[in-house]
Image 1 (cartoon, rainbow over the protein chains, first blue to last red):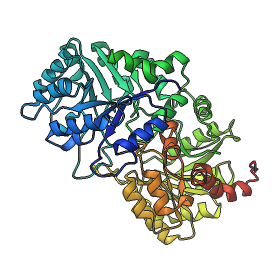
Image 2 (image 1 turned 90 degrees about the horizontal axis):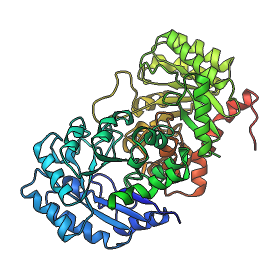
Image 3 (image 1 turned 90 degrees about the vertical axis):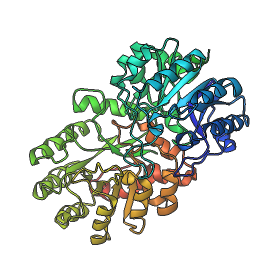
Image 4 (image 1 turned 60 degrees about the vertical axis):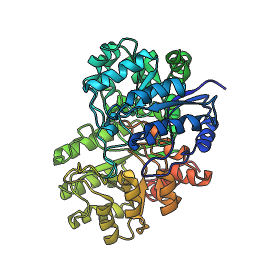
Length: 256
Length: 263
């Protein structure tokens, strides 16, 4: 079976809904059935919980259910006291390959100096940084769990300040348009997943805009139906090498 | 058999209606979608003038002209211009090739003044489609209907089949709002492919009241088709949602127009 790396899945529970695949066992079953060979997993608990040390510990343990399939990506909230130690533990204790950030749920903007410091520390450790711009359509959010999209305007300048940064924009395209990616692509090693990409033929359009090496397969399962991203690869007319790059090669390059 | 209830030409590459229609069919072919319902023109004006309505409908008529074997058209009408809308129904449905009506966001559909449009469309056996959203972020357009507005129509016209566009967007609310009204079916199109929408709709409404649509070209066929392909449902239910229900709903007007469908 051809390789498929899903760079955007979540474990644990979404705060306002049960999802098919919101336990480690059921998510693993869903991913295996869908032909996923590796999945980068964040945690929904990382959105609202303050004890991120505990969240990341549980995430790492949950991923050990299928260690060949699930790679944990820990949550870091740089507004919390001593967040630097959460980062250290992700890297040194849990041996994570990356982290996943949710600034809109953690209450900081990208032009906050602490964000630059976080990126710099992650880059120094060689960690991939996934920046989730949205988690849910803003028009459907519960009144008690509202989070505006992350504003990416400052991001290109920030990326230029952090040498060695490997940045993945997850759930990008509710918060920004494909046509607005130019500055980010020019700023450094920035990739985009296709989970929230919309429009007919969207994957081909994104490749044409940002370049083949910057496009990653991400499903945002189990919040989204996995088949959404899978069928997007079928909808766009892609050559074999393009498919291979999006399905796994680009993600493997980021992992090094 | 996959029939798509909800397509537009906006967002599709191409300069003309003909070019965009051809590209839309190419994408549909890649996912095995046999038939497309198309409506609204390129303007996307929330409250179109009578001339804008006519122009938008002309655009769709042009797009349909080479694709009668693949596409159905719905006439764009507005509660703000009832008389003109009735003229457009005569021009595009009674005397033209279209088979449904599309109400968008010009005026909330709950107003009784809309009734002549509903009655005439029903006389012609036309499919009646109303865009609906429950927006929780207070961005509702002034004339944008919620599922509750469509329920008001369903109460006044209990024998008229109605389609609740987008399942109300915030689908956990939309499904509940229309649940007690068996003449309302829901359209799955045009919201994020959030897992659980289709399972809840089938559980609460029955598969016979759930219809696949995409909202392409702004949306991807893929993301919307996933709501059915990825749902934890029987194959029989998926068949109904992907085309069986829409075909059943459209059969009377297709027969009245002498349009033959493969068995």
